[in-house]
Amino acid sequence: MIRTHGTSMTSAHYARMGEQEREGIHTAALEILQRVGVEVHDEQAREILAGGGATVDGVRVHIPEYMVARAFATAPQRMTLYDRTGKVALRAGGYNTYYGGGSDCLNILDHRTGQRRRPVLADVVQAARLIDALPELDFVMSMVLPEDVDQSIYDRYQLEVMLNNTTKPIVFVSPDFEGCKAAVEMCEVVAGGVESFCRRPFATCYINVTSGLIANQEALQKCIYLAEKGLPMLWIPLNAGGVNSPVTIAGCMAAMDAGILLGIVLAQLVNPGTPVAVPGWNGGPYNLKTMVGNYVLADEQGVPTEMGRYYNVPVFGLGGSTDSKALDQQSGFEVTLSLMTALLHGANIVHDVGFMDAGMQASFQLLAIANDIIGFIRAATRGVPVDDETLALDVIEELGPTGNYLDHEHTLRHYREPFYGKLIDKLPYSRWEKKGATTMEARASQMVDEILTKHQVAPLSEEVQRGVRAIVEREQAWIDGQRQP
Image 1 (cartoon, helix red, strand yellow):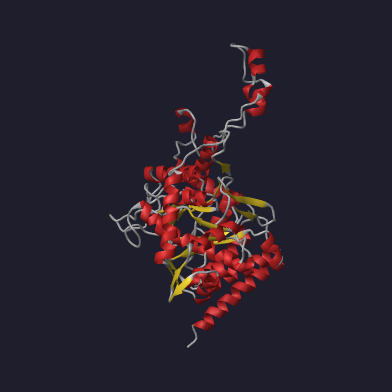
Image 2 (cartoon, helix red, strand yellow):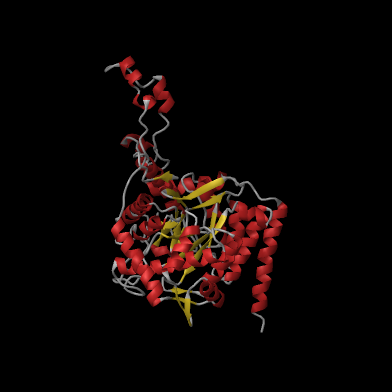
């Protein structure tokens, strides 16, 4: 975790937009909410919003400005997630930045063969164990969509193996409302009860919302359900500029922001104080050259994150991804720049590290490489301590211009502090050649294999494993029953 924007220059500083630009987008979003309205495709959600002062016309809901102001009065400025053992792992808020993988890629770039293939549940297991071991990655997502389980309830199988193979916080995704409820039940079993999970949540739901101006029923149901329990949520409406919103950055972001504000208002009406994170990507022009939803585009960088910082609520960002299909120069610069911009703009929970090909392909090697890049970025942007110990004037006076600093006790106290990385090669050519003349890609593959061979995760108790498995089996029986003629 690295905190940026410290006032004493304890960190890096950067801003994409100023106060005037952010205020302009916010004002436009308020006008959209009140004058245009948002489609709300759930009757209960419409009733809750109407009870709070909104005007309802069919599925179109118009929200006045005072409802938004009231919601921000109770919306928390940070979201705390714990690890499976109950220790604080993420304090998402302000300019604290944490990184993790993504979910549900349809393909995986096999680190052993170099070939693209369809993933299975064992890949979800390995992704969880790998991220659990990588020190610069802070939370776990499934990475891939396994094709060897029932596709109607694949998310239940994903969460079961994630709970068994990491102690780090989990971000889960469910295609339906029932899956969200089942996920919370599984987490409650692991936590030891409903109240225990609510008090120290180690997992949160990524809610996909259709767009800024259309809130789908499943997303609204999840929002209400999680808010009723007081559980943190990631409310993520996304726009595609030029497709479902204006192509200009400001217009696209204003329309998307209207949907963001809708989620905050709804959650706070249900249960004031419910933590809600907002999106830190999109909000800019879609790639109209290819009509592909690219993951790394220049123009959108930082715009939605700036709005999240303007509202002072947690931001669910995106970084460490590439639209390249291979581990090449493009993947290197896109991964690095997206990780860096997410941090500098102040995104808090940055997902999709290790994603390739516009989110269609996952790579374990890229996860390992990104782990080194994140370490470098954190070292490069953290503040520089300036005090008697670090200035070391007494050491300079003692040794003078010709002294040997190499074996001085001051050097021995501090020489381990600089960041060097596990995969970055800094050897002279002769030593690099002697060690096999490997590329970073090859070294990453070896690291992944070593971790998967050696890294052990503290297991859940047999009783808890049975409790989680019982929920998965119940869900399988339920979906089988739905298919009966």
